[in-house]
Amino acid sequence: MTCEWRDKIEAYLDNELSQQDDLAMSQHLRGCQDCAAATLGSRKLKISIKRAASARFVPSPELQSKIRRVTAPRSSFLPSWLTGPAFATAAVVVVLLALGPWLRPHRQDLFAEIADLHVSTLASTNPIDVVSTDRHTVKPWFEGKLPFTFALPELQNSEFHLIGGRVAYIAQSPGAQLLFGIRKHQLSLLIFQERQPFTELSRTPKDSELLAFNLETWSDGGLRYVVISDASAEDVRTLGQLLRSAKP
Image (cartoon, rainbow, N blue to C red):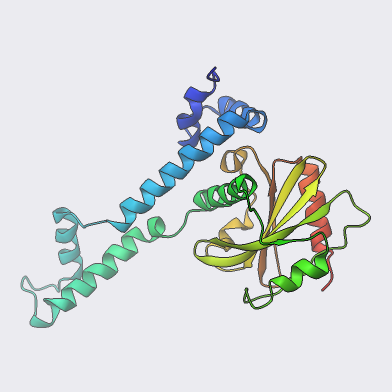
């Protein structure tokens, strides 16, 4: 049977719900796996359409006319140096400036990619490449595969256990994805170099950006750390604290 909230997914993603309904929908997604999966799928579709449209952008005749007016000198005639390739270069610069905000990965899209990566990993038959509960086995496995190193905490006195890890990619940047377990939940730790677009994650996300997940993110030593899971916010926060206290 289709959930009664299913018809509100598109309005939720487009920020068209009232504040009360938006909050209620966020709470519903935390408990309804079917709606959470449908919402994530719809967001992925929106992202792919936006990217395809950006990649195939062709200036309209009106925009081309505006470009000519902006790049042309005060004279009514274009000098010889501003024709052909020179004009094309100037036009590209103007178009890139106009489309800059759209060509760069949006913060909301980045959260969707992170959530998608976590879900895809859990759904995979081979979610990790190095399987071990020993941090001294998992950490060295990444040497030579990433342009940075990181520390993992000692978990013997906690409820968490290390499952393993693999190399992951977001926005064409390589990073480490570590899987941790607590009770019946799994948590993904993502580590990337702190540069665009990951600097966009410095602000606390809204529930509507994370769908049914809790997330903790911070920057340390030139690296961006992200913990994401459907585990409780307290569990995510506790793992984040353990990771912050980890020593090389």
